Length: 212
Image (cartoon, rainbow, N blue to C red; front, side, top):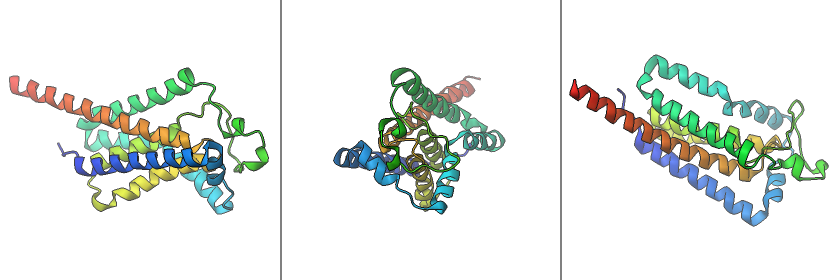
């Protein structure tokens, strides 16, 4: 069994938490709608195309790729994978559909739609804003990646990729930055739960092997 890379994971964990905290502080200073409009400003067709494409990095395809890899090479860490997936999905979906089902997205909260930059081909939603599911998914995958792979000094690149997913959700007018910060915290909590579940599984498996 290949060891998990806890040292890099902890660094990425604190960096993610710090990033979420920075977003919360700027949000408190500028205001929810003002910060959104600043991030959502039209950066041109190249940015439109990039963020429209990069937003998919927070969807199920990345989870499927990681699952295939684990089944092929590290299936003993499937507990880690499923615990993180279930925890993040449950938190996001329960919050969106049960706790805060009517939380307005930018297009629903800001009445003057002329202020909002939208990207052609993207259907803009109005409800279920908090938290950002794409951001939660991207940061959960990011943190799992730091655990599973020997990234070394390259781990900030993975973190940047996850952050760009969150930024893309704001740029595409689907979420407020506050929703992105919440998605990051969901990912942090989900990965801590996943690590705990994996450790408990390893202990039980070790005890079972010793008793045989």
